[in-house]
Every structure is written in structure tokens, then in C-alpha cells.
Length: 269
Image (cartoon, rainbow, N blue to C red):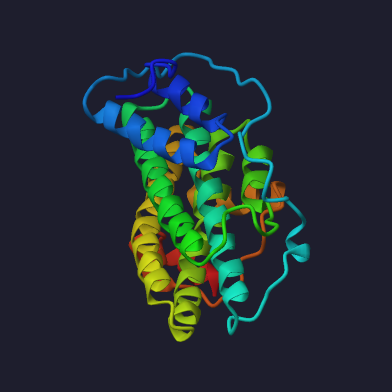
């Protein structure tokens, strides 16, 4: 059962857990919220206009958030170096929980399936976070032991006033980069002998294809609703919001499985 203090409406509950600063509590709360939704214990009011009390997202005092160029890369030949990499992945998954919850609560008047999709994403990101955080603890470290950067959430903040820009530039751009990054990161971990971490990366890549696919589906739906051509609209939004330039190598197989069109894949090249 979910905590009695938690709202019994899905979008309000998503905002509640987005505001939670403790990472383990947030992950567990999202898991229980998904269970409550599946069992019918949580309702949906898609039309309510909600407002957040800052600060959001809720996050712990550590890790220290710094510019991406200040995040050090250490050798994979040392335990600390491998822990630094795992820590970076833990932070990405923690941020991904927040991104899914924010997409869920922030935007009213979407179809019921939209909210169910982002709840599923939040639940799976919470699982990824927990798997990686547990693995990091097994290495003798904890989430917060190293600095991290906040680029993912910064793009979410820039696009918060337009759901089309949010879907175009967070799941379809920032998170889609994870499809490209996962295989080489997995290879590094496996080469270093950390097969348990490599197995977690396999789970994450499988699920992230689905998450980016959800982004693609709702981007297409929104473009259709607004009478917009998707490819040109994406180029306009990427320029307007200064999205990072996509650099290869690209995981074309995963991107294709996530629903990117052949036109979009050709444009990457």
C-alpha cells in the first residue's frame, strides 16, 4: 500500500514523488505508485491544472552538481575509476525518474495512455536506479560520493512550457543518446571484468529503447494534433532550444527499434 500522505490522484502523486529529495524513498515511492495504479487505487484527473512548490526536482544534498567539463574521467583499471562510471550512471537514472515524473504531472489534457506510459517509464527508471545504486554499494561507494552534472534536467527546465519541445528534446534527443552510449559503456565494464554491471546495462538498454519509443510515439501524436511536419519541426525546436549536436557513433539498430524513421536516421549521418 502507498503512504497515506501520498495523493490518491496520479498526477498529484507524481508531483509528490518528484519533490521527494531522498533517492531511495523516491524510487520505492514510484514503484508503489505504479502498483497502486495497476490495482485501481489511484485515479487520474487529466484536466487539473497543478502547480509545484519549488524546489523541484527534490534531490539530495550530494552529489555536488557541476559543469559537465568538471566531471573527471578516471581509469577503468582501478576500483575507484569503475565506481566513478557506475556513479555517473546512477545519477542519470535518478534524473530519469525525475524526468518521467515531470512529464507525467506537468502537462494536462493528454490522453490517459500518455500518463500511463510515463508512469511505466518512471517505474523502470526507478528499477534501473536501484540496481545500479545497489551495485555501487557493493563496490564500497554510495550515490553522492562523486560530483555529477545536471544537463538532462537543464533541458527539461528549458522546455517545461511546451510539451512538444519537451518530448522532442528530452526523450528523443537527450535520452536517445543513451542508446548510442550504452554498448561502448557495457563493453568497458565487461572488459574490466564487471559482468554484473554489464548485465544491468543490458536491462537498461532494452528498457530505454521502449522509453525513447514512447517519446517518439507522443511526439508524432503531438505533431499530428498541431498539423506539424515532424522532421522539420524537430530541426526548428533543436535550434530554438540549443539542443546538443548529435555525434556518432550511433546505435542505428536501437534507434530504429525505438521508432526513429529512416529519414531521421539518415539525417544523423
